[in-house]
Image 1 (cartoon, rainbow, N blue to C red):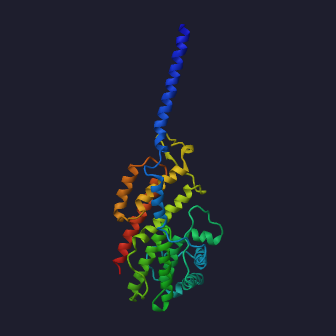
Image 2 (tube, one colour):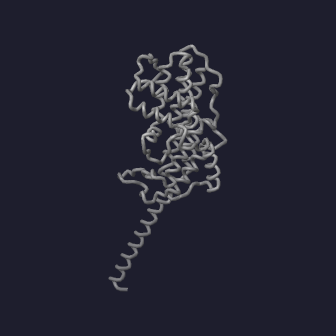
Length: 322
């Protein structure tokens, strides 16, 4: 072989070695992001069904029109600071629009109204759907207005309407709604204590069951799953690499794989048998260590775990007030 041929052969060998090395290096970096969960699809599905079943049955998008009207009307009234604590509001201090807001809430209560939580992946359209989307925070102000302007037993309808709103949010809201529901429950209990009025019979002040406690995190997890299932909100933000770019490349992030990892991790953390909330954070860390990397489940499951722990602590604190 001529010298020129040997040089060409050596160059080709170097190119092949470089190509093989590049492919191997790339595969080593990408393979963890392509690996499936450690559990079988059937086990993942079984646990996921158990998480889904923690939610109450889906409600029709009706029955809360009066509440949404009250929230919409309240948004147009003056912003009274009644969110931070139970604030007494003299009757003559209420403006007519505030009286209408409270009357609308009482009407919702007396018609056995319900709370229908906002959907996860749908952009609200129209005034009432926009009111539903901001329902959680608005409900805290709404209940504060009703409780603050209730001076005694003669205003019991307002107090029971606030309690009804809190319980609906606590049992059927998403995570933020549940937090507001517990806050409304605490302030309603505070109202009875401060006014020296006995709790009426029929008010359920028992400690929430594990299924109730885990219901809101399950609802949020299912909502996030809808996003991963191709909903309009699927726009995962990959973790930034040290170089300033994104890793893994966005094109390699598979919604199907991310959904499986999400269902697997959430299923281990939330599905029965129920764990003590204080054990969930350690369980989450242990579970994530065993899983291939993902751009999505750690964010979602941490939020889910924090919500479950917070709800448990709030529940225990509120029960001590009784």
